[in-house]
Image 1 (cartoon, rainbow, N blue to C red):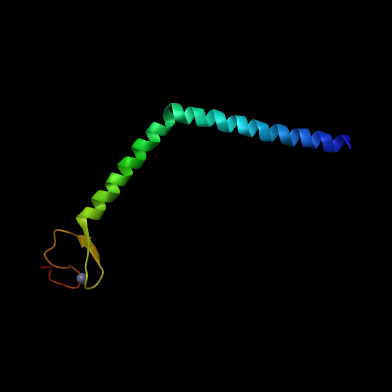
Image 2 (cartoon, rainbow, N blue to C red):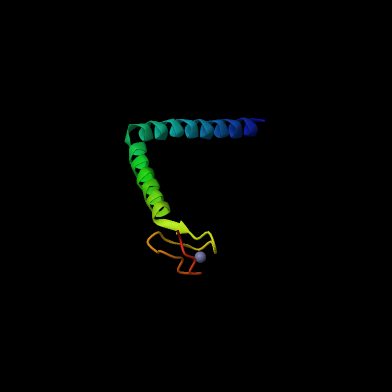
Length: 80
Ligand SMILES: [Zn+2]
């Protein structure tokens, strides 16, 4: 019976330390780390938007290529 109590206390202690660690990390993130993450995510989104704007998908063959082409380089479909 004592063994079960010791295991129980160990498990609860480990769980409690994980909870405390979680709040400590959450506070640290709130204090500054989360700002760096936001800057990273927004810069990535901007890169994605730029790639989406500069690329065009051919309505004829579905090939993805730069917007600069007057016609599709894959199937020579002429854009209006
Ligand atoms: Zn095409």
